[in-house]
Length: 148
Image (cartoon, rainbow, N blue to C red; front, top):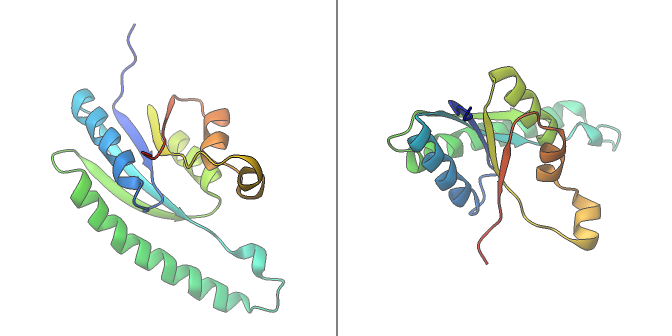
């Protein structure tokens, strides 16, 4: 029995590489008749509340990030998903956790996301959102590396 793909979760970071990720998501959606949920996860910054930075300032800053990201997301979706049913959402939290939770909650059949392909010390310091999603997802994950 062939897998049915009707709901694609496309995770982007709104960088230049996100256009490549969107291209794959739009292609799969058009071929499968699927809908696409495009998501960007803004960092919470809650880990900085103990550094003499008032929590209200952190919340205000995150609010500005989310507001700006939502405006960018709206333009991104209209630019890259023409002819495909797609919605954009900005969430706040740890990217891998939020992506996995949304995929489960919305019943995603496929996750498409970018990877930066970090190696060595960069990978140790920054981790890999894509790796965490691949290791913990219950649905297939297609990762797109940036073109050289």
